[in-house]
Amino acid sequence: MTKFSDLNLDKKVLKAVEETGYETPTPIQAGAIPPALEGRDVLGIAQTGTGKTAGFTLPMISMLKRGRARARMPRSLVLAPTRELAAQVAENFDAYSKHTKLTKALLIGGVSFKEQDQLIDKGVDVLIATPGRLLDHFERGKLILSDVKIMVVDEADRMLDMGFIPDIERIFGLTPFTRQTLFFSATMAPEIERITNTFLSNPAKVEVARAATTNTNITQSVFMFKGSRRDRQDSEKRKLLRQLIDSEGDACRNGIIFCNRKMDVDIVAKSMKKYGLDAAPIHGDLDQSKRMETLAAFRDGSLRFLVASDVAARGLDVPNVSHVFNYDVPSHAEDYVHRIGRTGRAGNTGTAMMICIPRDEKNLADIERLVEMEIPKGTLPEGSPTQDDVPTEAKTEEKPKRSRTRGGRGRKKSDDTDVAEQTETAAAPKPVEKPANAEVDVAKEKPQTERRGRGGRGRGRQDNGPKVAGLGDHTPTFIALSFDERRGHPVDLITEAAERDEAETLEPEVSDEEE
Image 1 (cartoon, rainbow, N blue to C red):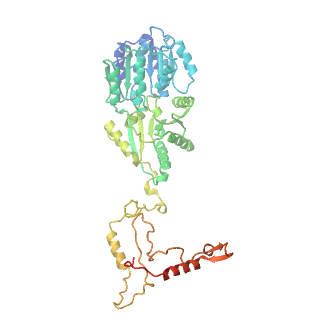
Image 2 (image 1 turned 30 degrees about the vertical axis):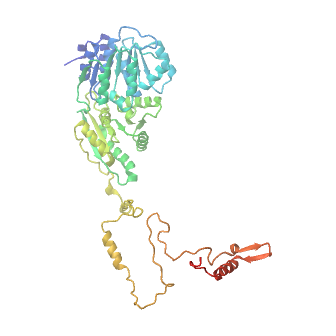
Image 3 (image 1 turned 45 degrees about the vertical axis):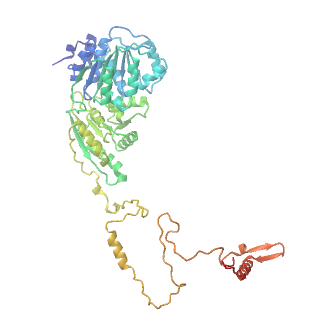
């Protein structure tokens, strides 16, 4: 069995490793450290929780033991996708370099630029940063990357998901072509492979597990759940989460609950506190100091449950996490591998539970296709709400769906349309037949209803014969009367109009022949 002493690490580094309690390197460490010490580029692919951080930190410290950094010109660079992961890499560096005189600087958001500038101005051997904050310092003229000898990209697939690939390509262009590059990832997307082919020179590929595999030490299960009603589904889902925690009993020492949305993180954490479960939220909208405080409390055991977004899904090394609860099915299948990788680390066993509602079944199928296994279906605890629990008076009949047709607004004929029309025709009273010699009273004859098509005016109006021209017989008095200044008294306009019409009628008509 390989030991750390067989990997040609520096004696001071070996002493620090022994003090941390590690004796045997993990497969990724045993495969990546020797070629890294030889100065070769390394492409490391391994599932999360296998010790990739130490796989590049230990050889970096051993190779940087000689030399001194100059102001604003770091000798090595480590890129991490999130603040928490960058801070964790810094903690690992402090632990393994405590017997050396190497210096470091941590460049992440949420911290004052002034404090970071002061560290850079003194000169640092190792610069650990997120891509965005690193480029901010470079554009301000506070950082020079032309002296970087070792460059590390950690959790490259997460960089891809967060949209950092253009920034990574730009940073590669700012560093010397002769640098040594160590590239680590849990999954290998085609875009990541393209970058490795572009920026890595004949790398030593170390793949200790099939890409996107889950740890065999983790017991996985998924619970198919559908709320009793749509407006109750969220509250019933939170109740199911508490029931799953209670069903584990003392075996659930602590746990991380992952949600897809930051808003749900806050709601679930508040709900758990309300029911007596010690929980706190962590996501990207919180202040950096609050995020670090919450994470520190969870690590030292003073906080039992950590409700988190995917900001805590990648690379965070929290020892002895017994359970991971996926409150939501992750929308990206790769995130499932990273989420459940927070438990079952360093050879320990762990439990991962996931709640799946009907709209998440497609994402569940993507996860099972990625990990090439069917996740076992769990049995819902007793008392879990289902659709059968809806009271009879609360059940409402499903309204028929409306569909727009050219014949009318939202009316759709059913399959029984013909039968309905026949029934309506049979029930309608038959018209009374009149004798042939009977005189028809036109005045008393009711006009038939004129149906017009869609868009026509007066839908359903009756045809009352020719339209009345003019004001008719019901002209208001205030319109019919006007004041005649010549005679000094009102004149009946209607009477004048009638006399004028009568005079025109008495004029002899001229035939066409006379014209």
